Image (cartoon, rainbow, N blue to C red; front, side):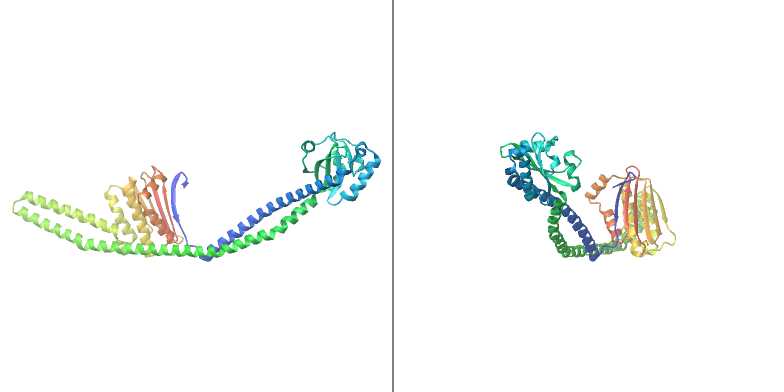
Length: 446
């Protein structure tokens, strides 16, 4: 990820979660998911319940309009005959005006109210709404929330929110009319609420059962993951122990075998050179001295390699001396080095070895890849943490370059990140192309 314009790779870790803690987190997330799904389910069921209640309101209006009112609308009602209107009014009050229907209106296509159970509306003219004209034209049944601010609805304002359902009917002489029934919206809402409340226990019960069924699976999976993590950590520790043991064996074999033999060869060559010179054979003496010099240089290179393989000075002379041995090859290559180790630094042997390995890996990368002129190593302790910082002024690298190096097998830094995480610490690598690289490791000091 990019931080302050620099490429940053980090590995961090702490004490791993216990199985119970992991399952506890899963349970909390499951409860949150159940509540969210429950809320979504309730919203959907409320919407579905309201839609179902409106559908039932339409069905009631269809039955009343076609089955009760339509046959009773005679030409006398259309012409305003008082006797015909009274007859229809008695029918409406006896069979139609039942909860939730509180008002009906019968419109002509011209916008005249031919009949209403509110007599003050009979004969009044208003402009038909577009939806009403469309229902008359297409012969459809529809419903809308009533606009109680409209003048034709002024007598319904005392009822509160209403749902008006309208449909086309025909008078007994075939004249087209619009039948409109006003129903209390509270009855619609109540019906919808009753519907979704009847399904709510089943929904919540199913979600709870699902959550409870997942807990044993989560517990089993967490235990397996934890066991796998412990196995990985055990294998990693054994690998490191085997690596250290093999390093010590190789270092011992080289030191007690090859290095000692080269030392003997060097002494023999020097003695032979002295004898040849005494015998007057100067060219042979020069050749023997040159061979002795090359042999001693090979010994020094082998000793430098032994320091890298297994620094005997690490636990004997301390971390500072071991780091100076690691910096020596860089100085011989012409790099300017600086080493700062906090005075009286006290950390455990295992943490000391971990910091040394991190410094060794970082300095090896500086020597091989950085093309740097200067490298600095700082070791300090603060707030119970031992901190190592290795920085150089080399060419740095991009995220893509780091990816390519990992693909090519450069896994040392990633291994150090895993080791730091296992020790409860952090490992950070910051690099800016053209401005160098900074490696930081922090681990508990004991």
